Image (tube, rainbow, N blue to C red; front, top):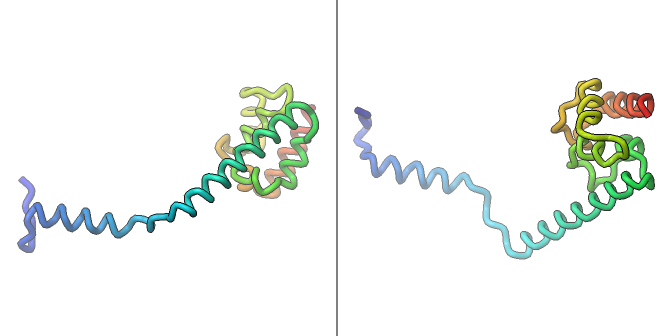
Length: 127
């Protein structure tokens, strides 16, 4: 059986834990802030979708995206960007990332300079 010390009742302990948890939450956002955040997120999705179409159509190069990524691509997964390249599927993209010792969950903005250059060199060597 669980014994409470210092005269705390179970109800008092639960209330304490609930109020402590409530104070740790982030402050509520205003409607305007939420709408701006949704608009920015939507803009990023639209621009990434267009970039993937451009990569697929050969109008953009993956090398340029990896070496000097636009801001809206910085939080995109490298794996997803590679998947948009013609003749690159899951297996080939995963193999390329493994050769460079890069996690499939790594974002474009999170790549180090070494990882960027090694990835581009290996990509150009394979093409």
